Length: 343
Image (cartoon, rainbow, N blue to C red; front, top):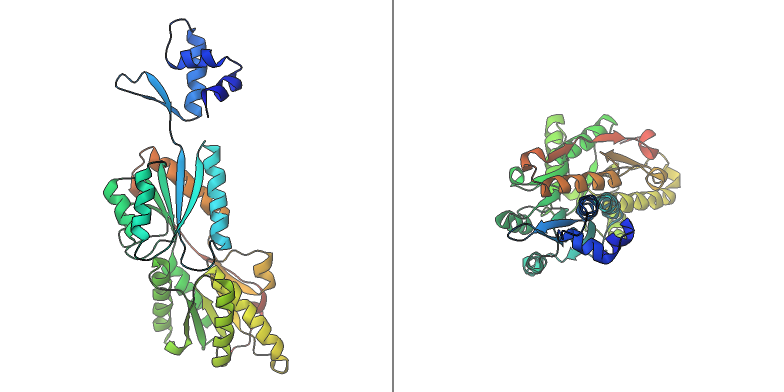
C-alpha cells in the first residue's frame, strides 16, 4: 500500500502522512500514532541506522510447485493454494505461484527467485526425496514451510500427512474387505510421500501374509488423461485385480473412471467390481459419484490455511521444532467399496 492509499484510508493529506511517518515536529502525537499504526498494519517497518524511517516491506510469499507433466497444477494443489492465498491476504501478504520444471535446470531457476529478493518466504509443495530446494533454503536461512517432508525434516517447518500410515491403512482396509489381488497405481519415488506410502503398503502386506505381485504395480504421472489410458490398459492386462490403491488423487479419479467404463463392458459379470482407494483424496460429490474410498486428513483449503499460518509464525521467528505438524489419516468409505465382492 502506498502513502497515498494510507492517506485515503485515514482521510488525511499525503503530506500529513509523509511528515507523520518521518516524525516531523509539526504533526501531533495522536496523528502520528494513527498513521504509524495503519502503516504497520499495511506492512511498513522502521528502517535505517537510527530506525527513524518507514519503508514498505515486500510482504510476498512465493509458492514453488514442480511442473513435470503437461498439467500445470492438479485440482487438489489448486485448492491448497487457494486456501493459503486467502489466509495470507488476511495478513496483508500476496501469494505468487511459480512452477519450476524438474531436471538439470531446476536449482538454477530456483536460485533466480531467491536472488531476486522479492519475497518474504517460500512455500514448497510436493517435496521430493533429497530435494535440492530444501537444501538451498536451509543453507541461506530463508524462512520456508513445506507441504511434505524430506530426509532432513527435523531441520525445517512442515505440514504433512502421515504417509506411511496412509499406505498401511489402505492395504489393511482392502484386506479386511476380502481383497487379495490388489494393484498399486504409484508415482515416481523421487516424491517423498510416494516412498512413504509404498513402504506402508508393503509393511502391511508382510504383516498380513499377503504377497503383492510386482506386475500389479503401475507408475504414472500427474496428467489425468494419460493416467486414465494407462489404468484402462493395466486393468485389461490384469483381470484378476479386484482393488486398486492409488497414491494420488489424480490417479484415483483416472483409475475410477477406467473402472466405471470397464464395469459397463462386463455387465455379464456384475460381481466383479473393482474397489478404488484414493490416498489423500478429498471426499466430494465427484469422488462420491465415482465410488472412490478416500484416505483423507483435512479439506485442501484448510491445509492451505494452516500452511499460511505456519508461514507467518516462521517469519516472526517461531522455532522450526514447533512448526512440524503431522496429520492422521482416516478412511471415508463410499460407492463400490460398500458392496464389493472380492475374488
